[in-house]
Image 1 (cartoon, rainbow, N blue to C red):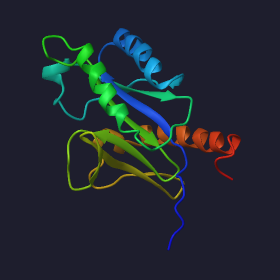
Image 2 (cartoon, rainbow, N blue to C red):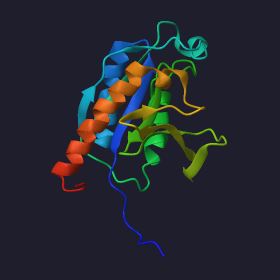
Image 3 (cartoon, one colour):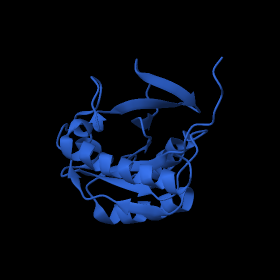
Image 4 (cartoon, helix red, strand yellow):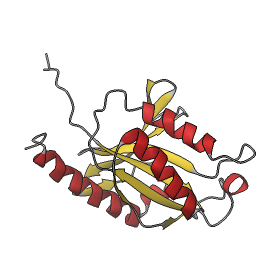
Length: 179
């Protein structure tokens, strides 16, 4: 029989897809009120893998990652997606989102996104939210899976997430969570 242990805390990260820098600033305020201090906001990563979001959000879309300072317990972390959906709705115009917020977390072993859509590789969590195993950490870097979204498959994004993972690992050590 295996020993039941509480898992290590994780690094909350929210991907923001938009074409509006000012909106990112507004959303950052909302997010920090809900989830605590923001550690950093990434550079812009151009989003040109699909035109799926253009009818709703317009052209010239980019992705920025909003990384939170304090580590989070994994229990009930799915509520983050419920809250980010409310923020998306708050800034919608004529029922069209102006920003798409995809929350998730970085752990030592993987990068998980939260979604409201079920699929074969997604695990139901709670409150209509599923966990999407987006990347796994092996051989000193994040590795893609057959279902990984094309932009998350890009080396530049995987390298950025690895930098966040490296800082997360050091943070775990400082907080005596990991040895």
